[in-house]
Image: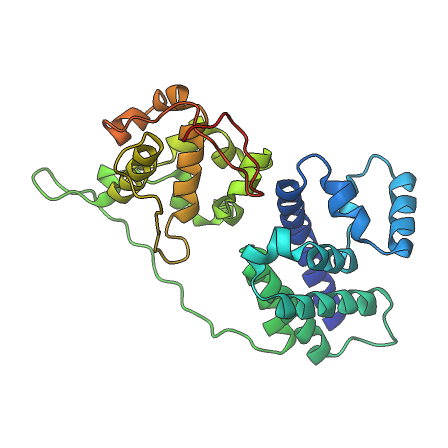
Length: 313
């Protein structure tokens, strides 16, 4: 628990700013692959902000320039590029703009504090705005910021008695085996404390721009972690059949809840169609797809609608 409301605000701003810097950079790279800093960041700032940013980067040239971006910069960057880089992720523009401005104002209040501690209600209000933005962006830091908000308001969670861990014996010969005997879980799931939740935040634009994690960017790693379900195989068959002039539908509608695999399916198609012969020879891919034949030289489109390969009707 933070020592004061001022400290809680500082912790929240740190969590928010670090997470949003990474998120904003990823989205801007997808929008401006070769000029994300100049076109995505610098051109959106006020003259005063540009001057201060230039002064800061010249003072410490070895420091990552992304570290010079604060909450006030983030508010301008996101709102100026909302339609082309953030709308599909952050949702409603007016709500997002309001939350961004609240955080920017809170950052200024925190950087120039008055005498005495900050008011709990003011801190909680700012932390709420941070949590809403982080949550909309799918960033794990949202939960940590929300915890700070509740602590600032004195909303302590009820203590939960720790359940005594009981050893579980493996199934005996002739008994139905447990699932963890048949399919050994990934190391991270054996120890949930080691799970990096940002691993689950994939975007097609970031992969196309080369700015994603290896788990999504490198086809061999991506397919090593992919299980070809019947629905995934059907989606791939529909698309490659259409590309080959077959019976596949011209429009594929995917109806799944949040986390249902829509982006994963898009990434599977992206990697398969990008270089089909090489991808089909990856471990488990041919076995997973069966007799699905992926055509070569199919047209791929970036998130901004530009063709990136030879065309094929």
